[in-house]
Image (cartoon, rainbow, N blue to C red; front, side):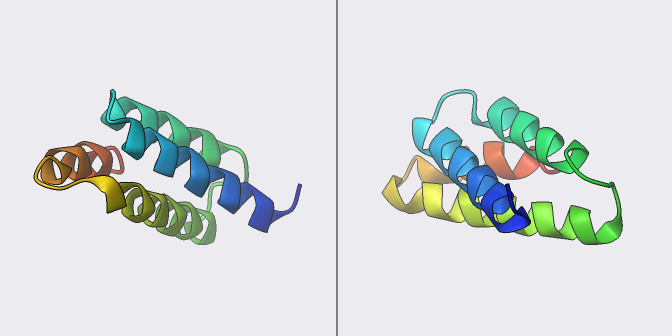
Length: 80
């Protein structure tokens, strides 16, 4: 599996987690940690995973209205 495929898988997993609206913080946290530990832990990898997770969050947020702020906060705090 190429790095691009891995990034796409991470983005899709995050997107699905956000769209589910269920335990978003924990799901995004687990996906992020798995992605970070799958490769060498260096600044380039951290930046790449963070950008990919943020893209997944953005794509997952498209279906939310008023409730979106709460879901976004759950997802975003998983990166912290």
